[in-house]
Length: 125
Image 1 (cartoon, rainbow, N blue to C red):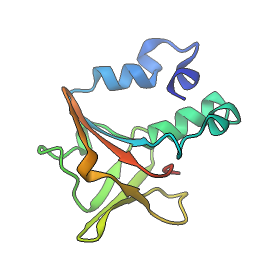
Image 2 (image 1 turned 90 degrees about the vertical axis):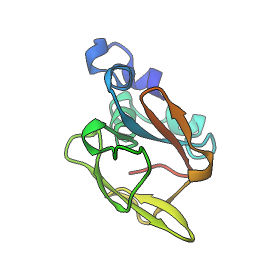
Image 3 (image 1 turned 180 degrees about the vertical axis):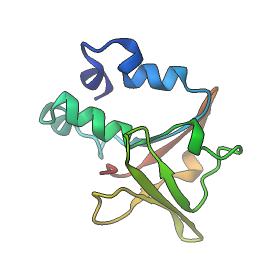
Image 4 (image 1 turned 135 degrees about the vertical axis):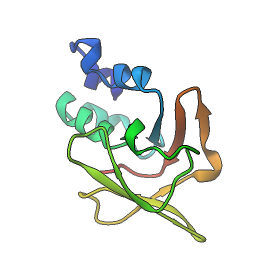
C-alpha cells in the first residue's frame, strides 16, 4: 500500500520519507486481514496515501514515553485527528470516518529507533 501511495512522488512528499525523517512517531499498522490485497488494488494511490497518513502520529503529538494515552492525536493526514481510548478492557483508536473503534494490539507493540508501531485490527478512516 505504501509503495503504491508513494509511487512517482519526490521523497520529501512520500510516506516513507516522512517516517524516515521523523525523530519520533507512532504508527498504527493494520494487520494483513485489515489491509487486504483487494483493498490495495481497488483503492487509488491518493486515497491510499490519505488512509495511511491517518495511521501515523508525528513527533509533535507523541508522548515522550511512546506509550499511548487517552486523548486526541493529530495525524500525518493534515487536519485529521484520531481518538485513542486506553481502558482496562483494551485500547482502541477511532478516526472521524469510523463508525466504531479499531482495536490496538498494545501487547504486540514494536519499538523502533524513532518510534513505536502498534498493530490494529482495522483501518482508521
